[in-house]
Amino acid sequence: MSGRSLLPEDRNSRRLMLAFLVTVVFMAAEVIGGIISGSLALLADAGHMLTDAAALLMALLAVRFARRKPSSRHTFGFLRLTTMAAFVNAAALLLIVILILWEAIRRFMTPEPVLGGTMLVIAIAGLFANLLAFWLLHQGEEKENINVRAAALHVMGDLLGSVGAVAAALIIMYTGWTPIDPILSVLVSCLVLRNAWALLRESFHELLEGTPQEIDIDKLRRDLSMAIPEVRNVHHVHVWQIGEQRVMTLHAQVVPPHDHDALLERIQHHLSHKYKIGHATIQMEYGVCETPDCTISEVAASSAGHHHHGHDHSH
Image 1 (cartoon, rainbow, N blue to C red):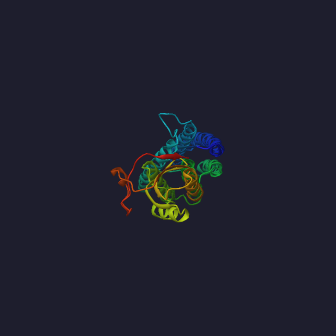
Image 2 (cartoon, rainbow, N blue to C red; image 1 turned 180 degrees about the horizontal axis):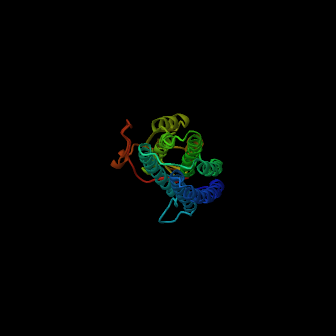
Image 3 (tube, one colour; image 1 turned 90 degrees about the vertical axis):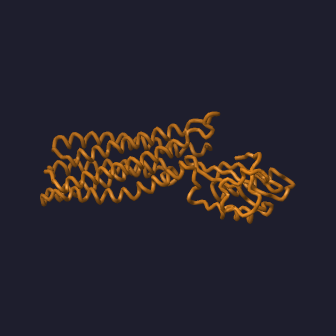
């Protein structure tokens, strides 16, 4: 990774740590409040905050590990840990949603008494804690960092849960209608479920080294040939993402250039500027490839020259 990316990582790390501390403190407050009031709702929300704390700690450790320098054993360093943490967080959130729905069904069938006043005080405190934690994470580079997005999603789920708990406490205080608690829990769970599923798919796609969603391989091949006249054909293209870094390998059949390095630099610049690919391994060929392994994943390719030998490596 370049030196430029260390600053956002430092900011993410600080915000994750602050959000973790806020979550732990108010989780303890909810446990105490739940025991005093006899409110199962508050204890359940404390359990939710416990999973938030675990998610934030995992995210924090992943960001710290991702900053370790590459070695001969791990040539990309530990960047993949952030994606793994996001995947585990999303999977855990799906499990939590299932448990909440199960508990909501049980409570709807057999309502339990809740002390609305005590529940309201603790729920409002939890709401402010979650607002603070969510604000801290939202200030980070969540659009670029899937790991911070995963942690923010956990906190958002608890934030919505706190809003539901405040509303439920008010309704219980004024009407005594306890089934509102499980009903609001189901609504909140459905909102969280949609985002959690999307994050699970995205992180799983990245773990499978799938092509980033913003990149159309066929369009990229055509675009590179049109943008650089010397490039006749682009094939054997593989693009994937490790952490926040896009990685690529490709073969380019070119007109024999007067300046090999200058043409390579133009291709690199185009990929970096237009597609944000910071690490590309480009093999330039003057004729048709002849070895069989060049056909790997070339389902959409139409010419006969889709094969593989040594690389010109630059990044």
